[in-house]
Image (spheres, rainbow, N blue to C red):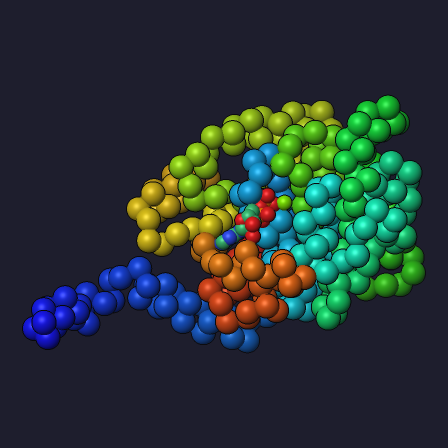
Length: 307
Ligand code: ADP
Ligand code: MG
């Protein structure tokens, strides 16, 4: 028995090649690299829409955790929840029951953003414009409104101007979380932004449906927002233990070598647990591989030149 156990216990060389060892080594390197890293302020406010019409690919997790990482790096960040499900608002611990003024009032009733923005608890430089269930009606109500595709863009422009006039510190980032569809809410988000960030889940059907999203982005660029660029692709839910994940990630990098962040986000149970505590993974478990990855990804995003 004893002999058998000795046989099956891997030697040091073998240990280093297990997925777990690779993960630990990567986290250690990441932790060291992140120590004392500065987040330089971008020259202008960067408005980034996080879009992918597929559900469950990590849009919301990416929005809230990147936003948290940027704000903890000393930057002023506004998160706009444009998904009627309100998962972003939940994850940031923002009140969003039906009576709370929300993106519905902004988009449909032309309320100024400053009427609905709430500070995120315990996060000094992080703010959120919540989504309530009312926003689900906006998709239909917007159809009959004037400039229906430009309503979010106008709201953000007015808000930035208003802050400027009041002498408030400039926002460094506005991150917009989209619903899993290509309807008018997503169109508004794509018209409002300069950049699109696409989270791609490292799973089998990852690239399927992507051409539809890219076609839509092309159409918006042609007709409504000539400056729009897909600046960032983020590989999410990367499972180091599967060869499939590595293949998909390689595929994504081959297709989008410039846009894909070096940092991919690992599959991590901490990331999925955090929202039920009304927290981002950065505060829920700062030392976890998910938190480290989102900090590294946010730093990478901030370091790359803005388009
Ligand atoms: P989307 O907004 O695109 O629908 P979410 O961010 O809500 O996607 O993620 C879908 C589900 O997967 C959620 O339950 C979330 O907690 C979980 N999840 C997201 N990213 C990760 C990850 N890196 N590891 C493990 N679970 C994740
Ligand atoms: Mg979501």
